[in-house]
Length: 199
Image 1: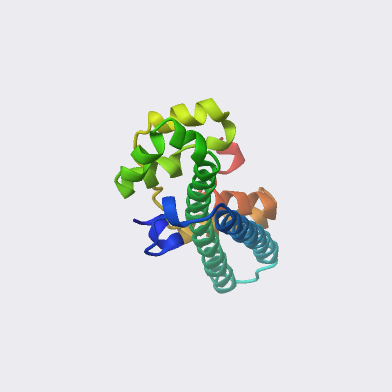
Image 2: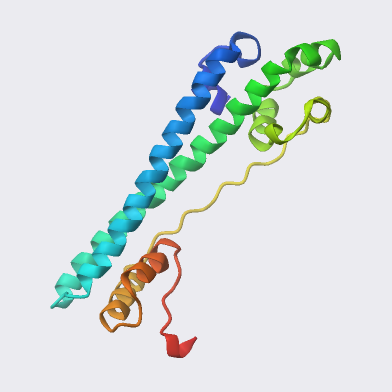
């Protein structure tokens, strides 16, 4: 069951996970996400420094070497962002499971708890990943669970950076058209650099 099998193993999360275990899991996931966010910021800073260094490059060979390093660091950043997106989904699933468990008595009283337990695992997982139960009050949560529907999860397609774009950004930095921070944004946001007089 995707996220649940990764987080809960072979255990059925609805019955077997205790509220305290879910809270601990939520804290650990938050910590991992914060660590990844810090690593992403560090790679952004590293790219800006490499562009700063490229300003003083004396040869095409040195520019090419720096462009390759910028590409490597940018790809590392993309991998960290992809890992963070997965952790965000896991966190949402765990947080919503925690809310379900906290409202278990209400859901049992309305007969909804047994229906939740009978749901197909994929349907429950998709629903938990795509909901924001924290923003809802008790009645809305119960209504949401009653109206539970699965929605398709979208996955982004990663694009590979092109060395030509990085080299163009390096030349723009050297010529004073871009500062290193702007060049870092161009590379990290997969934007194509266009000279200011063409904009």
